[in-house]
Amino acid sequence: MAIHDYCGLDFGTSNSTIGVSTENNITMVPLDQGKPIIRSAIFFNFEAGGCQFGQQGVTDYLSGVHGRLMMSLKSVLGSSLMDEDTSIQHRRISYREILGYFLQHIKQQAETTLGHELTRIVLGRPVRFHDQDDVKDRLAQDTMESIARKLGFKTVLFQYEPIAAALTYEQSITGEQLALIVDLGGGTSDFSVIRLRPGMENQDRLQDVLANNGIHIGGTDFDTELSLKAVMPELGLGSEMRGMSGNIQVPNSYYYDLTTWHTINSLYTHRTRSELHTIKNFAFDPKRITRLINVIEKQAGHKILNEVEQGKCLLSNAEQVNLDFQFIEKEFFISIQQKMFENFIQNKIEKLVQVVLKTISDSGIKTSDIDSIFFTGGSTQIPMIRSAILEHFPNAEIVQGDVFSSVGKGLIIDAKRKF
Image (cartoon, rainbow, N blue to C red; front, side, top):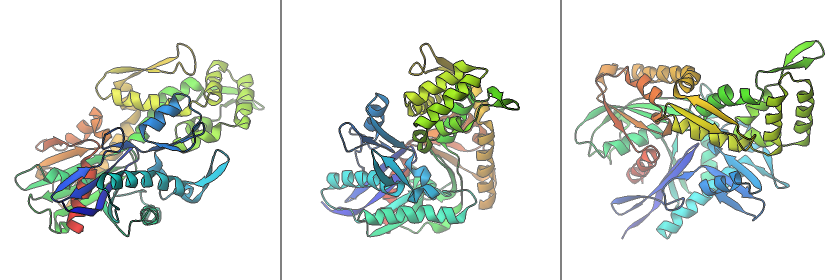
């Protein structure tokens, strides 16, 4: 059996996959408890030593195992953080190295499955890593390439994630279609208009791609909106305290840091605790500040993020959820209605729709020309997002792809053609 030395890797903000090729088959590699999807998280376990990857690391951290949890790793690409160091149990490690640890783990899993080394790769990338900033966008891709080469890949190519999803969808159709690909991921949302033609997998498809577009809005942004507007006010965001010249607002920096994975750990200091105890003494609502102090003292920031994310997912199919924050305070629950959540993210949804319509405009066609809309990515499960997009395409067939694997499968299809 012919075994090839190339792969297709979808490194996502929330989840990642890797596909390999054997003879005429493509295989998505089991990465986490036999599943071909791994959560993009790395946990430095201070008790047992070493690293844990994926959901097990998240679970152990949330259960109280002492260590440092790093999530949404992709979000630092192209930012100034990439070459900065962070403290991991008295060691200074760069974010570049941390990304390398995670991607090396995925590569090793794939090589173990194949039984030999992988030296060529097609990496997925969003249409835009960074909105309107070509320098940061290029830097993000260059960083990914340099990490891949350091891991032993001799040939590194890239493909837009929505194009990869389109190649997956193309495997399931029997006739030509003009399709809009909607890929709503954890960190970015990407859109492509492409002419699909079954049987053309081995051909250069550049002429079939009519437009690509993207925006740096994704599932983590919806988590942030839900947390800032429903959870953080219950910890004191927006409340007031006595100041030297009258009443002032409690500083909001603590709350914004609690909604961003790579800033949460910076709050777990004696200085922050001391500041908050002082704020509590001057606050008009000390109970809420006490909750915030409990979060910091219990180092429960990631628990909040996890509860908010789970609640967001449940709201896709429920009219109401109760977020359980009893790890902060006994009998502390926050009830969220689906309509509330939709109001929180309304502005971001409008921006997504604007980019969709610009993609259609850039392609030189009309919305009525679209034969099908292919949805992939976790955020496509939010009903309001789907309906906001679909109202502009009343004649299009709606196709739901594999939420987490469509891009990864398309990348290995693309790799087979290129290699």
